Image (cartoon, rainbow, N blue to C red; front, side, top):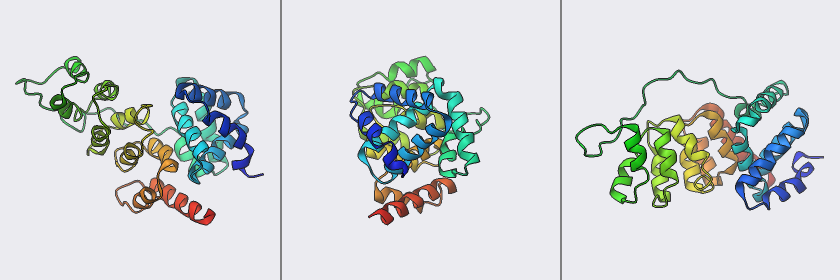
Length: 247
């Protein structure tokens, strides 16, 4: 039986849960209680049906991606990554295996000028991230610190256009792009997803977790984007071919 049918009923039940945090918690529970082999089948099935454009599975796969970053799943994620590598399921291993952390270094972007005549402290910038002043928000979106961006993403005055700008900035901080990916409000929208994937500074595992959720035109453009990592372009191309073969 194909992977997309084995878990079809489960995908449907999970997708019908409107509360996103509850859906993520139940996906965590599935990955924890299944054997490693069954859990990898669950991941593979969700990936394949999401790649084919199945709405239920795309909702589940998005929750699965968030679940993989939960501390409670750190060991299970490592086990799944090792199992995927042993089974030569490289399209899964590429996002299940945690990338080697880069050595800490200086931020790639400068702290924006807030017109105070001096650099603002991190605490001051966090406070400004809560502002409803659109002029200030236009400056805060350029802040390179993930902690500032996390606060800004909860700001009700922030717009989708602002979020796309945050994701499209180059150079960018990996932590900033991951903050947007992990935010329940914004990454459910197509334009921020695409902007994250298309940014070369996005961590590979994060970008790959979004690829099955892209629209056909976005996939084709990313597959041809020379600035993106080869595994990312290959993943986009493979999903384009999978969808065309199924149509």
